[in-house]
Image (tube, rainbow, N blue to C red; front, side, top):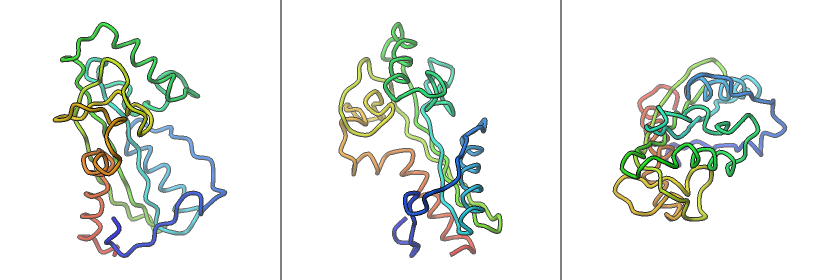
Length: 179
């Protein structure tokens, strides 16, 4: 999104900021909770996203609850162990999954632009790699043999759900009256 001529301020530059509770039932709900709250707080346009992993053998879970899959205060390790336990009898060919991201931009006046991106893949039989975060050591993107935890960050950014969502949001911003 660097070519848009917008200077982005990180959450650390805005601190302290209000507590945000992701209580929505969809990725859009959660992204909007964050963006609307911070747009009102800062009186500036805010870019926010919500994302998760959807595993077909688990009926699309953990989905919007990805960060809280093993419980409300679960760590990445606890979430991964819970996922691995639930998938222990599922063969590799049935471990299809996708990462999904919804990115939103909200202005203080209430204008909103949404975009979505997905990255299809499978859940590995065991974690591999130290890169990324969350479920990355388990997720093998379609057409790859390495997990997100093993892939270089620059390559991951080109194929990731978040990268796709942000590129789509940038395209929609260029077409909008907001720039």
